[in-house]
Image (cartoon, rainbow, N blue to C red; front, side):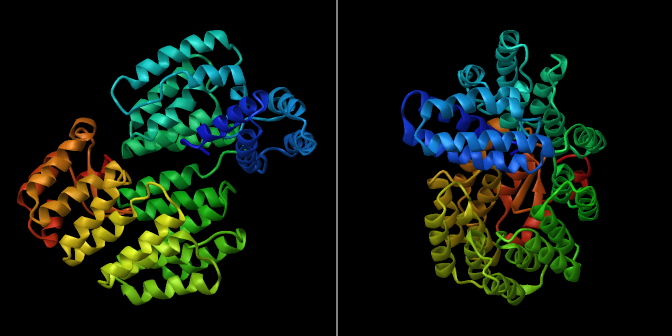
Length: 454
């Protein structure tokens, strides 16, 4: 639940109580179910004593729900449950309906300059009202992080530290934010992850995430080493084991990559699509569409296919030049799981790579039209438009991200951890003015500078 989804956890808690107190039982039940699901994940990582106390309380809550005792359920949720919990990826002190109401009154981060100062001023006031509260700045820092304001997220967490309210989760998120901001911060990030682990048994996957940051900068050997540290410390689960498999695949150690995916599947019977991911990596590493197709069939044979299997089927079709089938597969994936997934961007970029710029641009535009193109795809879309000869439109696309992201050290031009090039904003502008063919993209790349910046 680190980095954003803990906000869902607190929101569900607040909305459940509000629904119960206002006799809006349908809404309360919807939020209660998700709250308990998220809480169950955390209980698995708590100490046995905390687990037993919390489970007794949860059973009392469920019994009250079964007999339609909304008052008893609300009282148990509000007054008893928080006392049974210990620090995990959330702070139990935030399970306070009055405190959450105050926090919800603060305007959400917008990604604009000044967010950190504004939020910090509000939180100082709230801390004076709630002397037992902890982790308020951490709660907001994770939202600021999602706007790629990594240094701001770390600065905001410093408020918790200066107020004596820093939690282990706060140290963890600061480590992640600093690691994402710059490779130069990695020693500090690793030290903070180690300290957070020491303070809280529930935290995990910190080194896995730092490993992915190394991978994004092209350092797959170090990425693998970091990921394996979490496995050796028992600080990950099936997802982390599969991530190790993906790092091995990027290093072209295919036998051990396959073994890791097998182990991940054994650790989590509900896990899906990991052979599909391995096939995708294989395709990007030059093993061809036949290997990609074999991996997708492996998941199908094991009944381990879900949404990414559908998406990868679209990617495979695009890689084979079948744009109509690719689009149909992604249409079906968006129908199955609506949201802002940038899947048309993925198949569109594949078609751009293969020379079908008209279809590729049209598909990427579909994501833009439905507000499903995140900012990190927009530089690639600008390049696609320029290759297609739409230079004015490409310049407009670049201008749309210039105000907020102009100072970003590098833009990855591509997708899913394997960019085709890295560019500064100035290089992106020059590329849009000059590029005419995908094969020219490598000449604009600036990989030598990636050692110190993301």
